[in-house]
Image 1: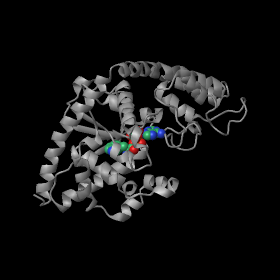
Image 2 (image 1 turned 90 degrees about the vertical axis):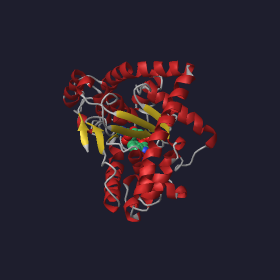
Image 3 (image 1 turned 180 degrees about the vertical axis):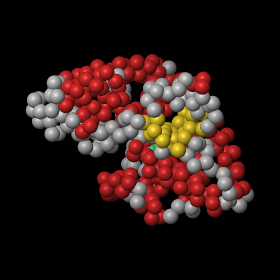
Image 4 (image 1 turned 30 degrees about the vertical axis):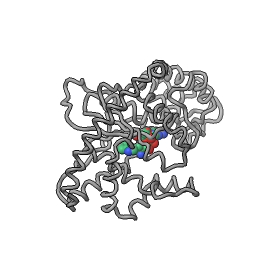
Length: 341
Ligand code: TYM
């Protein structure tokens, strides 16, 4: 795992050679956790790699869902990502199920995967605890599909938030197993994790921010709605009275400041919080102001994209077309290497 610095070198200095892959589930509500942990870095890395991003609908159906709104969720997720800066002229964006080779490679990888390893995956354990009535094989096999996503494009870099690092370690492991069992073919991809924002907690200040826990701030929510959520959000719980000093390191609001506010504001928070010079509401007001500096233009672009549905349609069509060609080439090799053809 390597850490991304917060400022990138000039694009022109970098050779744009390697392939970068990442994915996001089609949620109608992409949240600021997704943005801070992943999308923000995807945008930064656009000129450093050949970037491929997938809206992973095969992954999404491992949780209960309503088929009649799946297409709307896919469109909304694509739109939000483009609005946040994934310029479709500079990367490929596609819907996972439009490239069926993802499931074909998953099957081959299944035969290299020890069952015990999947049962020990943190996300599987958490999700199966939460959804007792629907612990399906897809949920269990989820990391294998994720490994197939990355390796189908022989990607070297995978920018993700902290919760996905274990899955990328698993992907490396699988690549190694394949290369040893058959012949050296797949690279061992690197997880790229941001130095700040890799794990944003929800408004409860306890669990990871996520759509399913309904503890999130949506990337495209209106400023007033965001303030209504931010105002009562949990801070450092040891800071009970305004006069108590707080510890920014124990406060999710400070973690979010690190993604949205400039360094001098972050310093103001640290000093003011530790000395009880500022209250939590002052700190949240400042955060809201700087969040809006970033989120206002994203929301505006999203509104513009809603008026131009062809931008999303064309991006997804080109993404699927080009990814199918790449995926078919890998599967040709894999079938030959594994003796299936
Ligand atoms: P998903 O859709 O849950 O999240 C997309 C990205 O957002 C990051 N993220 C967060 N980062 C910081 N704080 C949070 N609270 C937070 N919540 C989400 C995630 O780490 C992720 O990078 N299995 C993946 C999607 C996937 C994928 C892949 C990723 C499928 N195939 C191949 C990389 C490579 C997932 O469910 O992400």
